[in-house]
Image 1 (cartoon, rainbow, N blue to C red):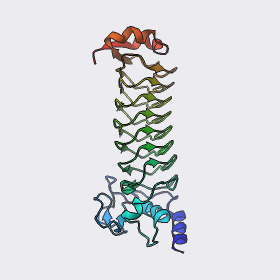
Image 2 (cartoon, helix red, strand yellow):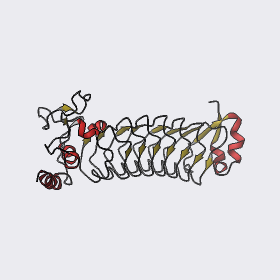
Image 3 (spheres, one colour):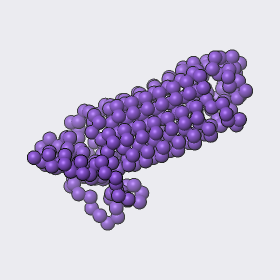
Image 4 (cartoon, rainbow, N blue to C red):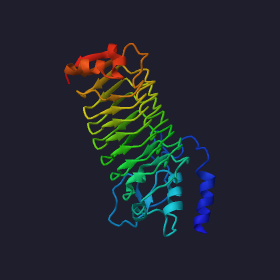
Length: 295
């Protein structure tokens, strides 16, 4: 019966438009001033207690509602640290929901992958903290999370899937760790608030349209480890003026990988490799933009 009541509550709360403020303060950090968030237990920002049967205190009531609906095993209306730690797959439990804050996701310590489309269409989501043990962020996992402003990718992640952050228009800051080897197709497509990106030395492949439509992107650094850059990888990056391309051997370069309508664009490549880049298929289309640089 309790599960049924929670399900009915979810229908009424999760997929309705949030009121202004939506349970976050003016900084997007939890409760409005002077109010107490129900739920008991420890705050989402605190360390896991020794007694893991304690209830997690969620910053967002909608997030708590969905978590208890799916993973409250003892049906007490709360989610304990122990119950959170037992979850191995979020599935699409949050897809299209109106959650605002999920900093408590870090307590889901058995998760190794964020499922495909897990948070797709969560247009109200502002804050989320990913668990440290994650290795894969699935395809379209955060697609169209239009209010997500920043996210730190855990150090164990090796793959950012196709379309993972596509359409995250407010995403202005992202940390990509040295563990990531692949950036999928359209992974950051149309992230129009992203101004700069440093791709770590671990990355070997940048997918097609990976940063396509990032119209505020002004600078990008491509590490020596990259061997392939997909078609249209940076197409539509109308503000891009500086590309620092470190590989001494020109990476495989898909058609239209860089914008061609920006007269201010400069592609810096290793001094001894200028001629190799200018002669390489794909790169030779940008011969006039290629300049020597001592990395």
